[in-house]
Amino acid sequence: MRKILIAPSILSADLLKLKEQVQLAEENGADFIHVDVMDGNFVPNLTFGPNMVKALKQFSKIPLDVHLMISNPDFHIEHYAKAGADIITVHVEACTHLHRTIQTVHDFGKKAGVSLNPATSLSSVEEIIGEIDLLLIMTVNPGFGGQKFIRKGLQKINKAREMINNSGKDIYLEVDGGINRETAPEVVKQGANVLVAGNAIFGQNDIAAAIRNIKESVTGL
Image 1 (cartoon, one colour):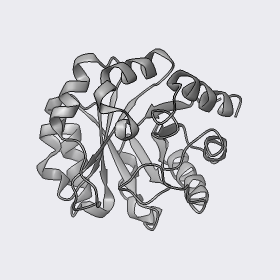
Image 2: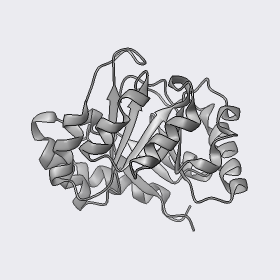
Image 3: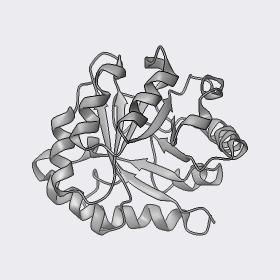
């Protein structure tokens, strides 16, 4: 049975209580801390930079899963790697030379991920699948938290799982967008094993219960 990992996204956290909320998530079963980096260009929102990653690294004991929703990620990988990112994920739509970008992430000793927007075909990663450590399927259009889950993504997740299995590599299949206790079982049944959840965890009054509810919803799947 595949272990399902939970990656709470700080996009929905209360930044005035960030340390407290992140530590609470860790103590209650979070496996990664997901950091959504947005540049106001690739997506219509502006969020965190390397200094946030550096700050998180000072008190977070679990891997920092840094999702670069930015243009020209090659110019910024070094900064996030040196700040303390453990996994660095780039968007195929933002990379001119994806293989070189993945190599750069690996050269800094980090796990490399590739993310696909809802309208982007899996064929865009066929030639790189054997080189990556994580494949992220977006089930909302990136840029904002709290969006509605795009159900068409379930078919893509299923195909992505098949592609990963055929690669013979142990690659995380991560899903981000509209994940909660109702949608989590659906994506896990299609083969996902890392669930990013922002509003469904940090947007709730009881963070511990929120994580527990998502974990319980996928137990045994």
